[in-house]
Each structure stands twice: as C-alpha cells, then as structure tokens.
Length: 441
Image (cartoon, rainbow, N blue to C red):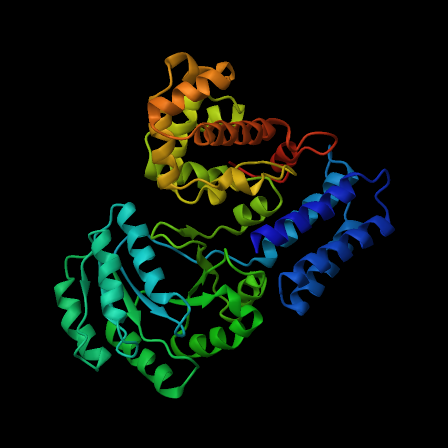
C-alpha cells in the first residue's frame, strides 16, 4: 500500500507545487488526483468524498495564515485532512494490563501476539502469553515457538478443548507478569459460537484492552468483521497486518471507523520485530515523503547504541565502506531497511529497489570481502580499481564479481543518502513544509 499510495499522493502534491496560480481549477484537479490515489488504495468511497469536500471547501474559503503562501496553505490542508482520515491513535499504556486478541483465522493473529509480546518486552515489561486457540491445529506450538525465541513464557494445552479452562489455569501462573496477552481462536467466517466464546473470554479475563487483528488484504470487507467484534466485546483498538503485501490497505484502515476506536499497530513484515506503533501524523508524513524521524529515533534507541547508528551522519549522506557496514548492521536490528528508509525525509526522491537488497547472508559475505581491504580502501573506496578488486577477491576467496557487487551496492546507497539532502529541493521543499505543518520531530 505504501509503495503505491505514497508515490500517487506525492505526484498530486508535486503537480500542485509546480502551478503558477492556485485557483479553483487547480484545487479541483488536486482533489481529483487525491480521489484517484485513495480509491485505488481501496479507501471507502464515502470517506474519500467527505475528504474531497473538506479539502475543496477549506482551500477555497479559508484565508492562509500570516507568512504562508496560498500553495503552502492548500498543501497544509491536504496534510491535515489526510491525517484526520486515518483516525485517532488508540491507547497503548506501558503498565499492567491484559490484552485480548480477536480476529478471524488467517488474519495473522498468532504471529501478531508474539510481535506484541516482543514490543512490550523491549519496553522493559514482564510479559506472559496465553494460547486460548483450541480451534486451529498447531496453534499452541506455533505461538510457543515464537515466544521461546524471545524468552517470553507461553501457556497453553493442546489437549484441552475448552478455551476458558485454559485461561483459568493460566491466569494464576502469570500473576507476576505486568502484561498478559491472550490469543483467541479464529474461524474462517464470523459465526455465533465464535462471538459467544470471545464474549465469555472477555468476561473471564477482565481484559483491559480488546484489540482486533485485521488482514490488510481484506480491504473494505474488514468493516463487517470490525462491526461484529465491536458489538460483542467493545473493541478499543485495531492492529492491521500484512500492510507490506497489498494495495487494499486503505480499505482496512478506513474500516477502523466501524469500531470508533483507532489503530494501535501496523504489521508489515515477517520477523518478530515487524510491528510498528501507529501514528496518523507520522504515517501520512511518510506517505508524502517527509519521513518520521520521531519513529526512527525511537527504533534506534531500542535497537542500537549512539556509537553504532548516527542519524545526523546518515542525513549528511557521507559515509565510507567501513561506515556502510557498521550502519547496515545496526539497521538490520532495527527492522527491514525499506521500512527504516521510509522514516527519513526523502521528499520526491525515489530510492531504487536494489538499494534495499541486503540480507544477513550478503552482509556476512560483504564482511569477509571488507576484511581483505586495506584501511585506505575502506575509508576511500574511490581508490579501488581493477587490480585492487582482483587482489581483494583473492584474499577473500570470492569471485571479482562479488567485490564489484559490494562496491556497486555501496555506490547505490551513497547516491540515495546524498539525495536526502536535496531530494525534496527546488521550489517546494518538504523539509520546510514539515515545519510549517507543525511536525515536531
């Protein structure tokens, strides 16, 4: 969704920024471009039309604040209304609580339960997980395996068919835990006995929060799920999963209006670290190419030390081969590189996909190659010519093509990082607009 909606929104804004006169015709063209982008992302038609009317009305009737041009004023309105479209942010307290996970089978509920446990664990809280899914074969084994990886206790009983009996046995065992997360059963469709069971689990556990897990691929079909679960147990937060694999994420996001609560997290990857706290302001900022430095800094503080990851150094776009390996190693612990790069204010700069093509296996190979380089080569890759490539390859026991691949990757990253300084340049500077929009990063 981010890959498709983001560029479309940026193109609409770029087109407006290039106009010499901002009149009714320019505003109407902008609104049409926004409508097209949002409808393609499967955002609910009624919400899109409401957004369009708000942008058009405000743009044509409101006077720009002092010191702000008409163009900047219209773009500010677009930004504000897109943030409003995403809804509010549901509460995530860092204290004692019991969280009940609801959702249909296939939504990613079990994986998300483990990701959530990891989130609270990283915040320094004692976490316990209960598997109350007695419907899906292997559910307990899957959840226990995931929890074992992060050293979080998980209670369940694959031989027990009564979910309430499992929870009654588990709660006393987790009396010392600050956060208890209960993974419930899902079904292929909404059924009365499923709803009845989750109502009884909610009553028994006295859950502090009841969070609904929705697969982004469902699009607007998620509305019915959200409504039924909300009527049953009063959903107070939604987690949207698989945001990295669908263009229908807008439908799932807008379906949250059915619960009148808000999105708590977004899941957009396969690893246990790939769960992101949802912030409407930061989400829209990233879609428009303005980054989300607040989220980036939070990730960096959790994963790496200041010596390992220097945001300012990355923003300057200057780094050596030695720096590249050190920073990629740090970034690897923070999450997928593509996700991290989206948090940087790149403006209209499009980073090629091969800049993200880095894996732990590749990094290990790169390390072996760099171990065969001299200090001069690591600090100034420009000196590496053909003869040096062959010498480095012999020392590392690899083909010269692999050394060239490393240097090629380094150059791609260097160009991308240099673009951060001027990627939003020209007449319309996203960095400057970010400040005018009131972003406090």
